Length: 383
Image (cartoon, rainbow, N blue to C red; front, side):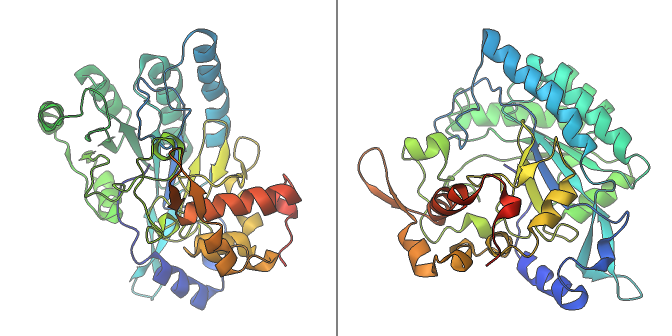
């Protein structure tokens, strides 16, 4: 999950872009393509099976199963990277140049797992991916690469290797009560203190909240760090109603928790040339409008250019609703009123308790309508 910044204001930016250019207008054509952020899960392998995890496939693997998940990542990651935008930058309509045009800023890619620093992933998958990304964007304005890790497998040697590869920021994501071994405040503080010492001694700085500042710092060679976890007071505190978090009844997200309208949700994903745009890509190459993942992918970036996949969904009322942060409206063109969507946003937990969240309604709509119509989302009627 990407935790880099709040996504407040993205709807207003989209409205400005649509109003001045028309939806997905000419300003971003040619080499000015890309997104603000791509969350790329490069491997399912993890050294834990956390009770709160949103993805059941994030777990330890052994023997033939381990060989299979690593082989998948080694084979797919280079193809995904090859199909990413030629130039990874975005337009910021809140900051205009002297001619009144939106300013262009370098985008970023978050490489995550699973746990990407495990020996089985780091050398054969992560490092080659970083090198390929650096080479791809070296003469196209560059790219900010962030590596997300729980932090407890990081060593000084690995840290030095990551910094030498030009990683812009390390995001330490395991500081919460759900990660075994880090489940007490004392354990979390020990890890934080140790890593902080390593980071500061190497001249690293805390990640700025504004990603434009990170991009600007990158031009000066600065490298950053960031700590977070699924704590009650954090943006991810309610927990996504997915995977083990839902099965273990740990998600306390209510109908008021519209994850679609937040960072790492679907908000702005179709406005892929402008600030606030992000998609999530899985180890098999499937791409989704959000980190939570809709029941059906938008397409597969290992087989087709990301921009082509996104452009194909522009104007489709299902995905425009997601991109605008209003998932309850995704089914209107298919006979699902807002009321019907909300009624279908309830499920029953293993204990028998009722549970409601908009993500449940999204899942139900994908299963009952889109899945029943076609496995190829290109053919879905636009009403």
